[in-house]
Amino acid sequence: MSETLATPVKNQRTFVGRVVSDKRAKTVTVLVERRNAHELYGKIVAHSRKYHAHDEKGEYKMGDLVEIAEGRPISKTKSWVVTKLLEKAKLV
Image (cartoon, rainbow, N blue to C red):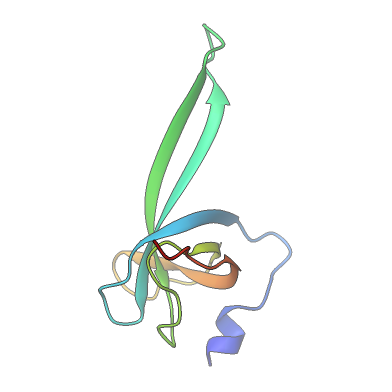
């Protein structure tokens, strides 16, 4: 069933972000940061938002860079699915 959730769709929103929490079962919290210019002053401003994404197998850990895609609502706060791992977390 998880394969059908992660199939790419033509007009599906996707974001790239870093996993900041993996404490919940089958769920990771992904921090997505975006930068754009201020409308009036032109200064580059960073905006960030956290998304709860579905991780069926629990394979993504804290610090991983992942891509998430919008999907059907899975729970009250979760309507995103992790589609692929872009970079594994560096061990410190």
